[in-house]
Image: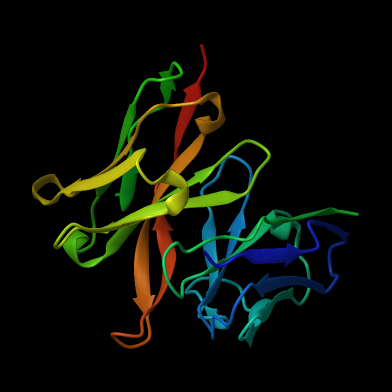
Length: 107
Length: 125
């Protein structure tokens, strides 16, 4: 199985901050990388597909980049509703494993 | 109408089995893979497996091989997750989700774009 490792595991930030979360794959996955946001008691929400594709309805302050083994999710100007846990996931071949998550909370 | 609706919360004892459902609507159910994912308390998301309703092609995570069965009834647009020999560590929120393919066949990039509301499963003696 392909292992996905996110960093940091937790992050404290303030409204208006620029935030970057990193995801590393254990092997080359090209651009087969997705990002999800999850809030407590809610289902995950797809933010980014194919490493950099912005899912319909997702604010443009979210962006994704990277290819191969190293990827980043950037929130350009943090908003109050962005405090949540973020997961990366590869989709190169099954099982489509997730990273362990990055919890983003208020500084 | 909500695109994916899951069955209600379940409480089971260790050693028992579990069967939860996920009903699709508002889209062409048989042409999208359906996947199952769980979120254990204080842990991350765990990918369990997927099924293609059109031909019931199924893929499982090796972590659950032998304990999990994913099936579908096309006639009622419903996918099922069965998990056997339950343990306390199977206590989790279980989600179904639709997989959308982005890009061009056969090199689709799959992502889970529509999710069910989740089914809470508690395993306790």
